[in-house]
Length: 193
Image (cartoon, rainbow, N blue to C red; front, top):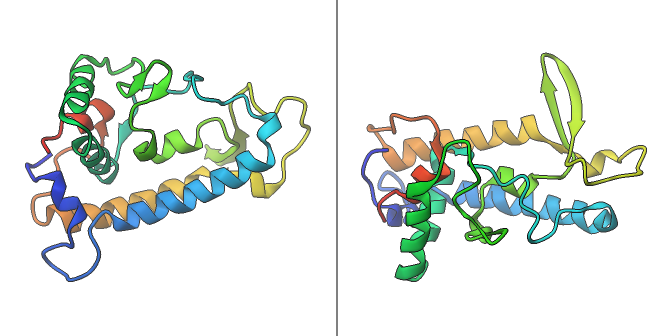
């Protein structure tokens, strides 16, 4: 990723007097959080997902907008805490647990990526033209069906995130876009503040 301070993600872009480049992403996070709260509220008794449940917490890849938001959140932590997380990121394995996982909890929970927010919930996806709903096998046991309002359309969500990321990359990086289309969580945590 080209060198640019993540502090810039909170300022309006140099090209416009509009919102900061990451604001669209923050708005999407708010909408996703509202949807997830609604689903978890309605089906709380059916969810095994709880603090300490970390089976889904793998080392995943992120769009640059997610990576910069995560790096900015890390930069707002106390220096010693941020340094400890960066050290974890430096030791992270590509196919291992998420480097933000500490004692079964996310160390940057409030800034976790979108996919982490939706883990375990019913996700509608399409694979080779066939649509299916997937969720954590520990959740929704004993239910024969779920209402459409309890299902997150993952393809639609990913399309929205990709569009927000494309706008972010244009606004944030200008004529020097990042070489990588996606970064690992560890790479995001190692972005210089």
